[in-house]
Length: 401
Image (cartoon, rainbow, N blue to C red; front, top):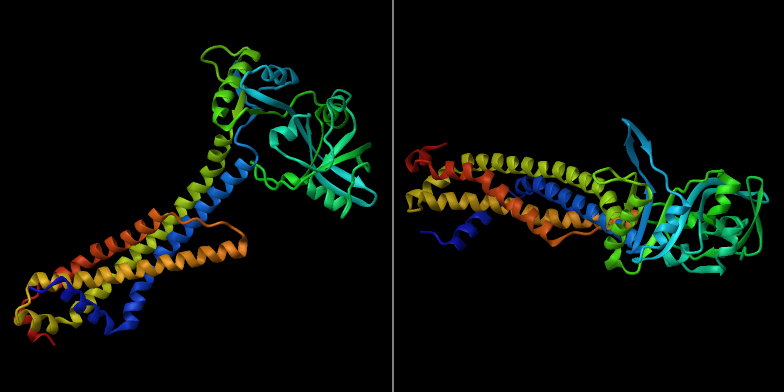
């Protein structure tokens, strides 16, 4: 009986006789495994980037937005007001609360202008976001009560309208109103919604309501729990307070939404995960194509080596030895191709990271699974040719031309 080492040596020697054909046969596995690794790496990188962006805004931040509900068979949109914000301030688990309204307007300075998002909020906003200022100061409670025309800029807006300057004390025009710049935030980057927070300006929410939009309703309320561990408890407390505020009875749907960082991460990664799984599934099809290629080449190899098989069986090789030899050849083709595919996948992922500044994360279990799956493909598609070789009649094989 032939030893495992001997079977492996014979298989490797057989594969080495036609290196070009062996390399082309492995190409399907290389492409398949490489594509799977690349897709998973970029998908996991996207998830990590989303989590980093959301957590950068604070793990204890809770956002309340209007929702939809059904009233007498009609779908209506709920409302949130300043009274709701005051009720939330009374929740023991809540530390800070900021009313929120938004509008998009042109910010004009001389012959420079920038179409940007105007965020109306109150004095708790920088505390909720843990966002320090680069220049000046944030507006005061008096500014909020008086609906003062004061404005704090994000870093990108300040760089565009006042390059290489401290704009504190300067004035800008929004529609027909003159606002005084009182501060500039430090650079913050993308927020939980994916937009760049540095492309915004911040004014008292009362000013936006009375002098820009004329709308008395809030777009959102942003609050923060005392710590990240208590966020879910605080969010549930906010939900119960809002149900009381809106007179929602037991069994009735909420007409608002309470969103935590975990909700944002789940929402933003859901589509990413779906797309990654779809692309990885498509890439996995090429593994099957590679397996079919291995079966095809192994069948050709059996035909080409019929006399060799007959000679070995005539001098004492058993059918099991022949089966193992051809099975090892198929597994080596797929496993080595899978290993090279892992390297190719890493290389493509690193290139995309360098070229597009897109993070790539490759979980170890995915690498093991990809190589293992490649080996299983080799066993599955290599078994039939190996079985066919082992079933040859030695005499008929020796007569084969």
